[in-house]
Amino acid sequence: MVARPDVAVSAPGKVLLAGGYLVLDRRYSGLVFALDARIHVHATALPSAASTTTPAAVELPEIVVRSPQFQDAEWRYSYRSTERDGIIVAQSESSPTSSVSRNVFIETAIGYSLTYISTILPDAIAGSTSFTVLADNSYYSQPSSALDSGSPSPRFSKFNTTLSKAHKTGLGSSAALVTAFIASVLAHYLPQSVFSLHTSSSRNALHNLAQAAHCAAQGKVGSGFDVAAAVYGRCVYTRFSPALLEALGEHGSAGFAGQLKSLVDSQWDAQALKQGVAVPRGVRLVMCDVDCGSQTVGMVKKVLSWRKENPQEAKELWDELQTKNETLRTVLSQLATQEEAAASDLTKTEHWKELVGAFASIRRLIQKMSSLSGVPIEPHSQTALLDACSALPGVAGGVVPGAGGYDAVALLVADDEEVLKGLKVLLESWEVPVDATSDGKSGGKVRMLGVREEMEGVRGEDASVMAYGEWTL
Ligand SMILES: Nc1ncnc2c1ncn2[C@@H]1O[C@H](COP(=O)(O)OP(=O)(O)O)[C@@H](O)[C@H]1O
Ligand SMILES: C[C@@](O)(CCOP(=O)(O)OP(=O)(O)O)CC(=O)O
Image (tube, rainbow, N blue to C red; front, side, top):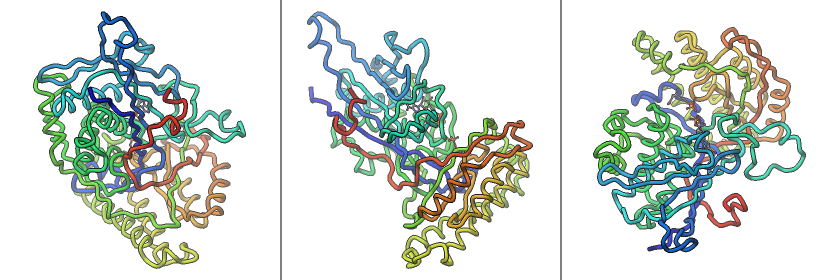
């Protein structure tokens, strides 16, 4: 048997800077930024049981997954092959956490990727494997005790809590996880001649497989911009036709393996254009986590049902927003390519003024979408915060990213110490005001996350012990 190599893969988190709701419809697009917060997955073959036990012992291949930054985060799986329906994965009784938790995203990623491998190189699936998941610290809010300790924070922190209790910061952990996990399974079991992150055909297969597994695990078909960011990085994203996934049966149903193979190997109608979007040198993204203790469920449903009931008004609004989103993208590209990028003060240039104007127009239209649909996409408390941030020198503007709501804002600012300092001072003293629609909950804090934009999507990492230290042992 060929020795399976240790591999490590990472995939980035995301922010949908412009195009929330619009990107659900193929006629519109979203401006998607990848973030330098990544989820890493390390894979290593486990020694064969036969070498450690008596020859009579039956070796059952096992997949062990650990997420050692969290408490009780170890899942063990057994798997079996069925003729036509794929590889069926089951959480083992021996899983330390089997009675407490399942990790549907990991379970689905394993089932889908092994099933795909079984259709191209069935003999490649053999033996036991250990996977370690490590998330960059910004995916979760750290307890303040960890932040105040004075010592530099380690590359990967221990969060002293379980995954389900951890406070997520909304950077798209499940899409980055599923993408990095599937890539690590494929790179670990398949020879490089069949799967390599350096070829566009492998990236296409990874994208399709990750979209299918992510939708199955989350039980709904979204636009998939988060998986696109995880695979391709910063891009202008046009979604895939949802019908592509509707044709795929349930994992384990008759014929699933063949259906999955054709779906994964085909060319979807999704688009992730890399050329269309740039971030000028001297400009950076700032993400803020707003801890206001209130969330609005069902926002997408409500916005879409308003759109259905008001097709004409919605079309005008959607079209206008698409135009303004494109202006934002174009101005950013112009700032990035023109000589102005070399100007001593970027904020004094014409294109900077246009950037400020593009944010203002987008926000005006988002506010209109909020009031017409009755959904707090940019609630009043966020309007106050965005207005205050935008008034600071060096801040081009900001938005409520993605679906909007109370929990985050994204800003584009001049990449300058003084500008960041000014922003920090404002945020430190900011009290989220009472908002009529936030169930009366207020007084939350705003925290600047330690992340910024990044261009690159999924990538191979150094898998050696040197790179991950004791986390993978
Ligand atoms: N570090 C991690 N280790 C293991 N599983 C993770 C990790 N981060 C995320 N997940 C999986 O992703 C799920 C969170 O997904 P979701 O609620 O959709 O959040 P998000 O909006 O961040 O994608 C978790 O319940 C878990 O199954
Ligand atoms: C409404 C949307 O267009 C954008 C939602 O973006 P968010 O970034 O808010 O998403 P989650 O991290 O999944 O909560 C829905 C979609 O595109 O799927």
